[in-house]
Image (cartoon, rainbow, N blue to C red; front, side):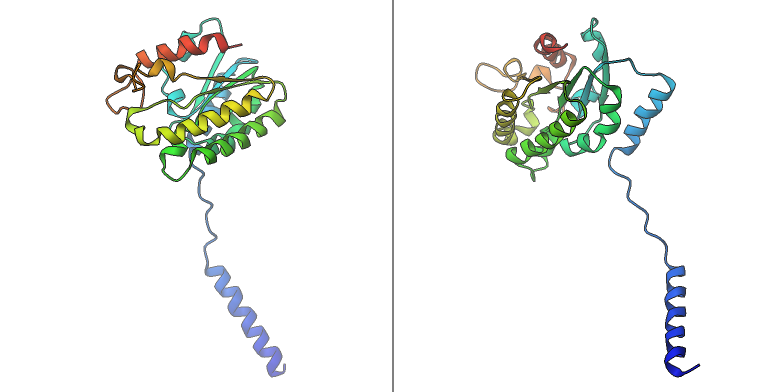
Length: 224
């Protein structure tokens, strides 16, 4: 064996030993994976209804206690996961929306995106469009309903960006078939344009039953 071949073999051996000693990187678990798996486990033990109205989005959906009772004549499937942003709903759409073949999708999301302080109203709108297009490609005829971003008192400084997102989404949906923009802001604001404090929990972010009662009154006529 000549020196060149010997050195090559030694180099190959060292690389092999180094590789063996390295631990393969573990892929990070995506946010909310546990919550999504919990939904899937529930579906296995209790099969979901056929052609439901799927409510999805962030904590305003997840924390809506007894949601189905507000609309007793409708078939409701609650698939909200708290803290989620529009990108998260898109990531899991093929697991918590599409498989149910819903007749209607009701979405509340976007508030958490903007509240990070890193996402503008325009960017939240763009995230919404990405989600909408994905769902529309998989479910061409589903009725898609967006609930406007609510005026949470604790996030008052984000109201201008929320308004931009709401307006852009409203205009976008107005040009598409089988869509609805449900504006819940009028019932959550005083005549002076301030949030009604009695609708919110002490954290001034999440809603009390009184808040959901207002939502139900506005949303009810839009449900299929």
